[in-house]
Structures are given as structure tokens and as C-alpha cells.
Length: 314
Image (tube, rainbow, N blue to C red; front, top):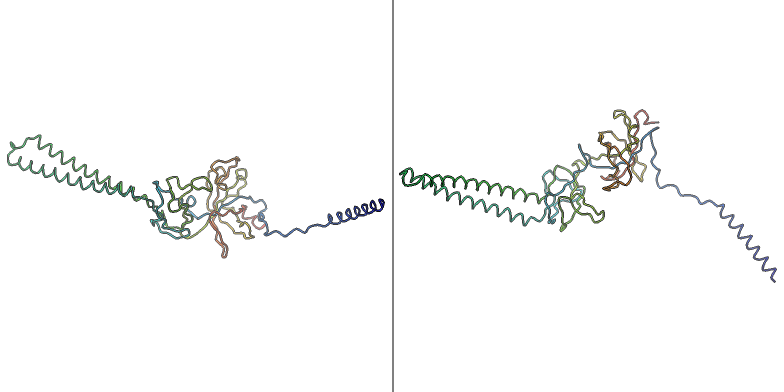
């Protein structure tokens, strides 16, 4: 009986080993990639990361900050809305400053009344002096004249104070600096904002209150070439570049616009204030024609390949 059990265990072990060997030889068929990875279309092309942004003659997107601090009272624009230069976008609580402006305006009335009073006194003294110089002393007449000039200066000061208070009151309304589209509104009604911007609880830093782009919705791409690759960049007139949209097989030809001749730390892609790795890059700006039926947004990351025009088809 014992021998039969041992023989059965041995047979089971042999079958288990053969089955394991058989299944280990089977190869699991890998699934095809979801999309074709971007490839370098140039023989000796340079790769760089890029960010799509609103096309600007200088700089990047327009970041709007308030010049005064306060609580957001109203938001008058929506993200994606087209706005004209000077259009109100956001209002802060201006109750205190409005009262200050009203007080300054009342001060003008006080100064005007004081001026009218001293002018009347001076006119009386002057008329009496014209009739009989002995009726009014020269010192009293000079004092009245000086009082008129002082009252005139006080009136001018009151008007300037009102103008300053009224100008500061206008700062409580954020307006569009130029015709464009509202790309982002980074605050909400009831939030406190300052000249540093608004606090973002997700990133733990301050961000612009409103970001706007150009009115034509034209886009450009800003890429960052590693400093060790700068010497391999073709001359601007010989430069050719293409942009690959991540997650797709779409490639868009680019046209060189300009470069910023200032090598800076590579912090744009991570938005970090301090750089952990000593990597410096040269920013290059390219324009492109947006293809139909392709959705692109400012802030989107893309892959850029830069080469020479003569090698673009090789």
C-alpha cells in the first residue's frame, strides 16, 4: 500500500513538472501600442519639450494681478469669453475706499466754502482800504490776501486728494489690458486676493488671478532646448521643426519665430520655484497653423523635433 502511494506521488510530480514546462513555453501575446510613439523625422534632429501658449508678440500669456488687496465681490467674465480692452473682469469689495473717496469729495466742498469766506473778507478789507487807506492796516490786508492764497492751495489739495482716492477706487475693478480671450480665472467670489495673486491650495503657491490670451485664438509653441544641444541648433533661416501631439500620431510643421537669448533653469515644465537638477535651457518660439478637427489648448505639453530644412525628408 505504501509503495502505491509513493508511486502515485511520483507520477503526480512528473505530470506537474511536464505541465509547468509546457505552460512556461507559452508566450503571452503582447497588445499593440495604443498609439505610435513619436519619432525623429530628421537625420540629426534635436528633441525638446514644448508648451503650447497663446501667440504674443512679446512674452507669453497676459497675467493679470490686482494692485490692491481685497475680497472678490463679483466675477464679470467667464473662461473662454472674448473681451475688449478695458472691459471689467472682476470687482473687489470697495466699500472702505468708496467711503474714503466720498470723504475726499466732501473735503472739496469744505475747501470751496473756506475759500469763498476768506475771499469775501479780503474783498471787504480791500474795498475799505481803497476808500480810506487809514481804515485798514497794511498788515491786515496782507494777512487776508495770504489767507486767500492758502485757501486756494487747500482747495487744490482737496481736489488732488479726491482724484487720488477716486483713482485708487478704480483699482478695485480688474479690467482687460487688451483685446483677447479669458484663458483662466483662478479665484472665486468670497476669496481674498492681493497683489501677489490668489493662493492655490492644490499647489501651495500664488497664481495669477486672471490669464488672458490674444483675441484671434492664435497659438504658438515655446520649446526648451537643453544647453548641451544649443551648438547643434541650425541657423534660423535653415531651421525646420515639427510638433508631435502626445497620445496621437498627429505631426504639425512649425515655423521659427524667435528665440529668447537667455539660458535659464528648466523650471517651466514643473512650475517649481527651485530647481533640484542643474538643467538650463534656451527658449525657442515657433508658430503653426492649427489643423482642422484637432483640439489644442494653451498649456498643453508637446514633443518638438528640430533639424535642418535640407534634411527634413531624410
